[in-house]
Image (tube, rainbow, N blue to C red):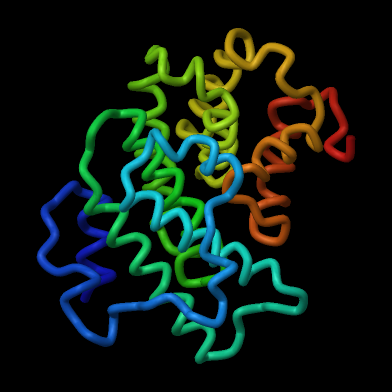
Amino acid sequence: MDRQDLNSSIMTGSDRIIDHTTFAELQWKRDPFAADFFVLAPGFEKRIHLFTNDYVEVLKDIHALQCVQDLPGYSCQNPVEMLRVDNQQASIGSRLVDLPKLSPYMEACYLAAYLSACMLCCKVWRHSVMPSHVSLHLLRKLQESNGDPFWDGQIDLLVWMLHMGGAFSPKGSVHDDYKALLQENQDSRFTGKYSSLEELVAIMSQFIWSEKAYRAQVEEFWAEIHPSIKATQ
């Protein structure tokens, strides 16, 4: 029920009926034995002054998901592990949706975090319709805010968002619009910022990044944008 309500809110903009606090069994809590996982990635730590405390705490929870995904041999096949990860993702999504919509660029930050969480670990989320819808909403907010001076001082953050959104967008007009917006920024803000896939990955690794969960899609997106440059560079 909470998942259906959350999905409906994201897809249609409807008001929430219930949330992650409604049912006791859905009130996920951090594992006290994995406290080192619940920290901010360096790129967000540098920008902590831009964000509300509630958003910062969600980012820490997503970083913990990333750490779990990157554990050697982890595959999220154990039913107990899958349930815990699913509840953690549901909690993350519910809290992100409930954050105040202060500006288009801040909404883009929320949506990029939501998308990155969706694509970590849980197959139910990865193969649902939600990533496509979230990537579409993220694109719209990035297009709406593209002229905002905010991005001139947050280039690495924008690089991460555009490549995450583009890599996990469905083929078609949305995917093409991501490439067009990325090209527009490459001709202006991103000039000389990166020229190889590994330089791009170094930027994205400052934020939310998992080799296992993201690399293949980002590499494919890179190859589409830079067909004359080998992805193995």
